Length: 115
Image 1 (cartoon, rainbow, N blue to C red):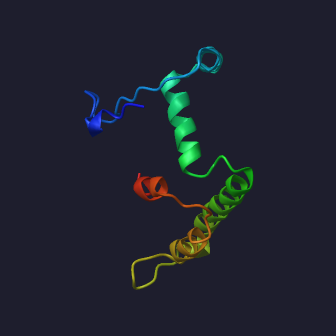
Image 2 (image 1 turned 120 degrees about the horizontal axis):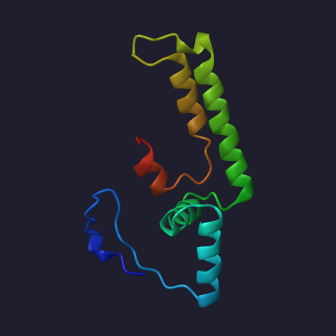
């Protein structure tokens, strides 16, 4: 895989990467992208994110989705919007505590946390 030494593309939000696939996998890859009307780049990027974020483990994926859903519920509760002198809401403090239980938080999660 050629990572092009980190040089950004002309789009400035993506970096070109070249991969080699067995012929049968390439055919299946193209068919999947066409069937789902998404680009091959998107399929590859989603697969890479899934692997490095630990989402390829069904237990961890479900566990993490449950925690994220719990954080959404907490943020939606009117009482959780109460602000403390620190400037954080009760909901934010609870979500920070829940976030510590996310399984297999990776470097990718840390890099993309503020997006």
